[in-house]
Image (tube, rainbow, N blue to C red; front, side):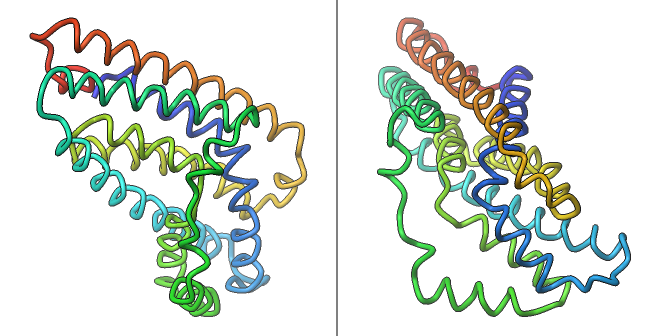
Length: 236
């Protein structure tokens, strides 16, 4: 993938993590910090727990990225189809950005109720009540499956790569870029109340999402008008 694409993904994810991710998943971090981590635990023990949780999320995101990348690869079979996929993905990204800004309800409309299933709830409760190191990783994996507009945006980006490898890379970079905010939240609960700061970071991330969407639409148009260009060139 192009360096600019990686840096863009990292920037959007990092900025958005201080707004959207803390707002959406902050409650889970605070819950497991209270239930699963003893107050007298050392900083090393706490750090390991928070990192295992974050790496669990990254693992799930990577798997989802590979799946969406593979799906994108299956539906691309001609220059026009490849270009159309990028244009479609770009439009979806722009809509996602506007949705994150609160201008439209695009992401809300495509959210599903997976997290409300009895199987998911039972697994989540079981892992939350366990205090083993593995349980932190598993909790992160389950958290990675929760409906989230930000995850949907990066899943769209992964699909636009038309490659399971690049798709996994997109989602892995996304997940890793959110680690600093979520790791810090485990130690600094004041982050959840810094509303103005979170809103500012979310606004910056939303604007970046829209810009990246427009860039992806341009790539799709360029792909259709340049038959010699391969889809891989758009991402490598």
